[in-house]
Length: 389
Image 1 (tube, rainbow, N blue to C red):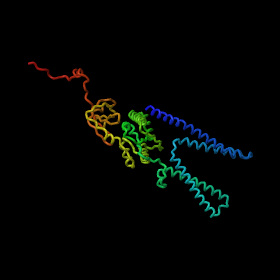
Image 2 (image 1 turned 90 degrees about the horizontal axis):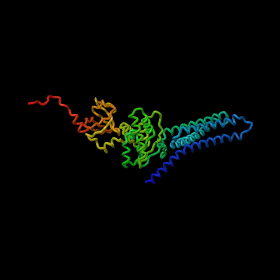
Image 3 (image 1 turned 120 degrees about the vertical axis):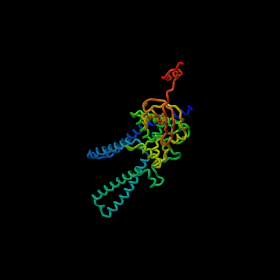
Image 4 (image 1 turned 45 degrees about the vertical axis):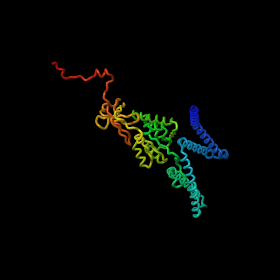
């Protein structure tokens, strides 16, 4: 056991050292690239005529080279999370655009020869400019089309696709509600779950936002979700991956979850019945934790006593609403005046639906603590006393 833990510790140290060395290697690569570009721009300057114009032969080439270096390095820095699918797609699109521009260039040359424009120098300049403009336009269109339709490219080119395909057991995609619920932690510890788990980065961001909320309930839910995620990562035999997904500005988390599940053929684990319905409408697979809990967990036994804090008023008159630590809602009779207090209740009924578990309860009657308390707090008789005969 100790040897296994030491091996895991060594592996963690190696991964941490790799993460620390990655920025240094990227910085060294950028410096090397800038130096080589400046050296390449200096070659014409070294071989130039001493009597030449310094602005044209010295300053302009080096300035243009430095501008290109700055643009390339800034683009590299602004896109830290690069996807290999995007790189391959851009490369193939540029190649396709160059081949298309070559074919169009040949066609332009044939038209120029037919119109006898090859002997005119001005016409040749405009033809060259036309070829360049057409080539750049075709490359741009090809890159734009591939980046926007890379997931459907297999329909055009069989056996070629840019999205990562899932093989073997399909991973499970956890949403915010399932992490806050916490039952996944208990389920994974039983050993029944053998599928890898995926948590998108935007779900972690939403939990972080909730944990920083000014609302106490939202803050507690966010912190509970982050703590459950950490427990999942520490569970042996369970692989949890944080998916780095590009998030458009203003996009909703539920819509992003469904899109990711449909795109990569994943199963959504949720306790949100509305999200489960939307995923099913979109053709995805969703697994509701409440349905699993309704099958595996015994219903609440009427008569069981629990302590719960009354959070708000219920829909009916004099009702109060509280929540158990796992998020189960309890509707308490005659508790509207106990908001913000921790009271003891006795369960009267429990209903399990696909939207969650609903428990009905009522406050427990006050019970005497001791025999002395019961003896000294008996109700007094206020009627007539015994008559003497």
